[in-house]
Length: 375
Image (cartoon, rainbow, N blue to C red):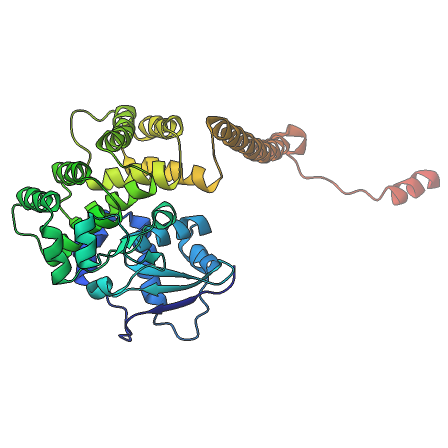
């Protein structure tokens, strides 16, 4: 892959982390994604630095696929923009100012459509996104003008949605909240019921950040989830994974904390491992540590990921190769130890032989022979 131009919408001359990133984005992101984002910020201030995906992957001990997955995540939440050449090769990455990200729009952002109610679309010219854009790349959240927001509020369905959302949040909605809410409704074509389900379940799970909810909404759009029933099915799959892993680690009746859920997300969604592989790692963790350690299990699973494991058969092959290597190493060590012991025994035997416990005499046999012949 060719070198990629890395640039930003601001140039401060030093590596600076926005408080908005720490407060609203970092806590909901995978830890590996955060590392990659921070490394991008650092690279911006390195003069004469030839940036490439392979270089970044090598530096952080990731695969290029891992890096691209992180880029896609940060693009979805609006913190960077991926730029492509005419032949669809990644040619640039623009890091968007966290505090001014609403000023950027996606390359897939299109002219107004009839996705919104006809009266609203006609009155506001509300920005929307084409079906192709939704299927391929979820767009950046647009920034609606005050006139557009007022026009949306004239729609009873939208008005009820805003009221319900304020009830969930227990506060008036900010401009960012309003833009995000209308983005889901107007651009992602989410129904009011689906939006309310998203907000309700996110808050119930302890995620009150609008940015977290926006990430979920974009993921649902990517996955083609358009109804509450489909969302419940998707959530059930995640819940089933968490329950299975808790049982494999022997965790009782307690909820998993965010860091533990991030591990599960990494194993299932980033590494793409099936539950039987993850369960095997959890069982080995208990065997080795006698306690439920997500960190230790992650070490096992990451090593399998780096070794290209796809199934339990691949794990069995790795185990067999490891056993053979261990036996060979042990045999070599035993042979060396045995040889050393034999040499030591021989030395002791020679030292203790009674026929060697006297001073040896030296004779001149030629002189003795002449003496005998002379007589």
